[in-house]
Every structure is written in structure tokens, then in C-alpha cells.
Amino acid sequence: MVLSAAGQHLLRVSRPGAWGQHLLLRVSRPGAWGQHLLLRVSWPGAWGQHHLLRGIGSVSTTAKGFQEKEIREKLQAFPGGSIDLVKQESGIAVLTVNNPARMNAFSGSMMVELEERVSQLEEWTEGKGLIIQGAAGTFCSGSDLNAVRAMSNPQDGMKMCMFMQNVLIRLLRLPLLSVALVEGSALGGGAELTTACDFRLMVPGSMIRFVHKHMGLVPGWGGAARLVRIVGSQNALKMLSGALKVDPEMGLQIGLADGVLEGSLDGSGANALLEAEQWLGCYTTGPASVIRAIKNVVVSGRELPLDVALRTERDVFGTVWGGPANLQALASKAKHK
Ligand SMILES: CCCC(=O)SCCNC(=O)CCNC(=O)[C@H](O)C(C)(C)COP(=O)(O)OP(=O)(O)OC[C@H]1O[C@@H](n2cnc3c(N)ncnc32)[C@H](O)[C@@H]1OP(=O)(O)O
Image: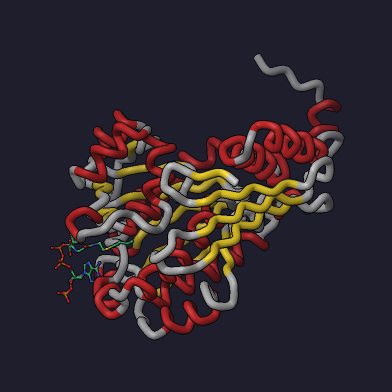
């Protein structure tokens, strides 16, 4: 049993030798919302490579606590907008946060739809890349404030937070190279959503802004934890405590943005999307099996203890070694000048 800096009890159990499962039992602080979170990390031996990192970190609790069905029902009570998914022949899918009347704020039903789209992407074995954009030239203004007001009690807030944490971490772990295409504003939960992608591309005039402080909040969809890993703790502290407007120039400087596009010519967003597809195409060229394996080894390297990451890498390696792309490259006597 280890006591973390935050005063939580962390109990880590691993089965020696079998490297089958790591269980992380987090006992919540007394007086907090009284639930015991069970984070289960499973490494089934016979995984398909596209399912490699599925199941890590899915959050479940005892019957008294988090119930996904109950949360889904509650979220569905706040309808509006949609999350649209188009899977393209190129292996790049486009996911659109679509609620333009509210600057693409996330209604409750959109949170549920996002989870469904992530499930569809988890099953998409031909996929290599994903672009997330907002409709009508702006990215996303975070949670729908009408839903936020209606769910402002701590229990509902915590349930929504757990639901979104779960969805966004699954999004980040998809075996696809993902890009947040930021036009207009990415505010609050919208800023958090950008951190659930591998890359962020910004157009001139766009901004990413963690406005949570001004709402009397901190990020709760996992955005702070991911932000620290992307820009470092100093920059993350400044961004959160100053609610800084990060424009493309600053984004590039601190490593939040991976590129700046020219952007829309006609305000439709079409040009930015084409540019983003071209940008991503440089990285998704090649067989899906290899691109997906690359993403999987990077996710395991980023998230797992070194010994486990090394074993994962070996297993992923086993899925491509002697595979069609490998044999073809050997037969063609490829040179890498
Ligand atoms: C853990 C998650 C934490 C969170 O995400 S908390 C939410 C954080 N986000 C916010 O506080 C965004 C608040 N909105 C704004 O600052 C501004 O509306 C924004 C996005 C800069 C756009 O400003 P403008 O271009 O001047 O447009 P506007 O204010 O007239 O907005 C157009 C319509 O959209 C609505 N809207 C914008 N953001 C919304 C939101 N998050 N939830 C619900 N409705 C939202 C806004 O109320 C307005 O509607 P209406 O035309 O007045 O009916």
C-alpha cells in the first residue's frame, strides 16, 4: 500500500510472472464522493493488434458508485447537436463536433454520441488516422453551459467527469494517428478535447484556452494531466492559472501546436480540412497494420512502466515481423537513402 502525495491510497497488485493483469485500486478520500475506483489494466495474451491497448483504464466502481448506464441516461436528458463520423477510403476518418448554434458546445447527448463514435473507431481495423474538427469554422466551446447548470451538484458533475475521462482516454489510445484541427476557439472542455489527440494543428486566428479557472473549475476530462505531458508543468501551470489564450504562434513555441495551417479561404473549413489531411497523410502513408503498430508502441511507451512497455513492444513487433509489409520490403531490397 502506497500513500500518494494527494493522500490517496494506491494499492498496486500484479501477478508475478504471468504479466496478465495490473490492478490499481484507488481508495477515495473519506468525505469525497465516497466511491472506490477500480482501474483495471488487462493485457490479454491473444489480443488482436488493433485491440492492443483497449481496456486500459476503463473506469468502473462498485454497485454503489459509477454506473455507466445511469450516466448515459442522465446525459441523454440534455440533447442537442451531434457527433458526426465519416470513415474515408484513405484510412483517415473525420469526426465533427456539430452544435454550431452553441459554438459546438458538448450537450449531454453529444457526450454519449462521442462514446459511440469512439467504439466505432475501435472496431475500424482499416483505419490509420483521425481528424477531429468543429462544425462551421470553430472547434468547441466546452460543456454546454445549460447542461452544466442543470448538473451542477457534485455527484452529477463527478459522474460526467468520469464518463468523459473514460471516453477521451479511449480516444487518445485508438490505434490511429489523431489530429485536432483547431479553427476558431477551443475553450474549456474543447481545449481538453484537443489534448486527447496525438497532434494539434491550428489555423491563423484560432486559440486554445483553458477557461476553467474563470468558471471556478479545473479541467476534469483528463485535460490537465495530458496538458502537463504535452507542454510540461511550467507551461501547463501558466496556461491554467492565467487562462491564457494560446494562439498558433504561442502554441508552436510551447509545443502545444504541431503545425499552423493556412486555414479556410471561404469560411467553410474545407481548405483547413484538406490541409490537415495532407499534413496527416505524411504520417499515415503505408499499410494500416504498420501505422497502427507504431501508434500502439508509442502509447505503451508513454503510459506504461518501462518493463511492461518493453514487453508490449515485443508483442506488437511480433504482429508485424514477417507480415506482408515486412516481406514485401525485404523482397524489394528497399534502400533508405
Ligand atoms: C470540464 C468542462 C468544463 C467546461 O467546458 S465549462 C464551459 C467552458 N466554456 C465556456 O464557458 C464558453 C462560454 N462561451 C463563450 O465564451 C462565448 O460564447 C464564445 C464561445 C467565446 C463565443 O463568443 P461569441 O462569438 O461572441 O458568440 P456568442 O457568445 O454569442 O455565442 C453564440 C451562442 O453560443 C452559445 N454558447 C457558446 N458557448 C456555449 C456553451 N459552452 N454552452 C452553451 N451555449 C454556448 C451562446 O450562449 C450563444 O447562444 P445564443 O445565441 O445567445 O442563444
